[in-house]
Image (cartoon, rainbow, N blue to C red; front, side, top):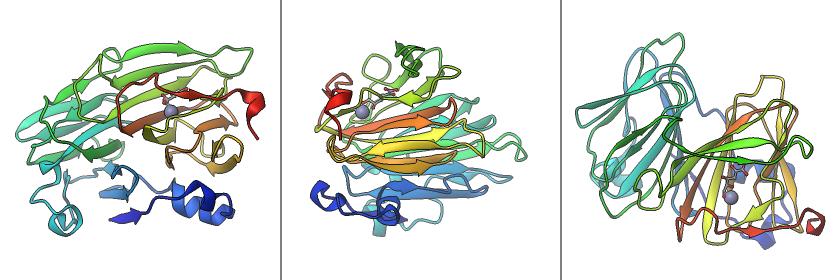
Length: 280
Ligand SMILES: O=C[C@H](O)[C@@H](O)CC(=O)C(=O)O
Ligand SMILES: [Zn+2]
């Protein structure tokens, strides 16, 4: 499993394009028949792309759990959240089968011993975009489709940032230890996400961009509010956002993204808002 160390904002000011990408960008998330995992020392979040082909894949597949997590199974001291961005698939948690259509989400509680992932049709495989964080309480496993998510409409056509936030793993929807997760969909012709931007010193966040044509891109903005940098992201790529960093993007067309947060609290609205004109 790939390990990423945290980055100090004072050091990150001096990073080149390559170094910014090496530290914060996650590419090649969905390789058919494989699980891609990136372990970040920022709040110990694990970002995964799980794309089963003709065989099902186990959560701990090809991973020395004892060596990497120091536990006997993956979710012994962790929780899991996912949203399927591919074709129809299923996730089996200790014998319980959850069917995940495109855009369906699933929360898997600490303590689940066997978690396996399958695609209904290997020619249109499921793509489970998955986050895991340390957890200390076992809540319930919950299937969350888009209709169960808490919906928040933000932005306007005039500001090119009209979008809908679907809060899947959120205190008003399901219980979780520290993970919050959801999906934001840009309205047609709208390109700016999370602008005006914010930080939240209490939580880190990971953004995963998808629903982008292959020849399009989202310029993801990061950095301290007065030291912004950009990372060019393509379809199905993610960016790790340390708590000192803004996380915002401008696409060359409309797109969707999945955000996930872990850290000190679970107050979604606990943001440090930044005026656009105060940024540099
Ligand atoms: O802290 C919250 C996260 O950054 C996202 O939920 C913001 C977002 O989806 C958006 O503005 O479009
Ligand atoms: Zn945020």
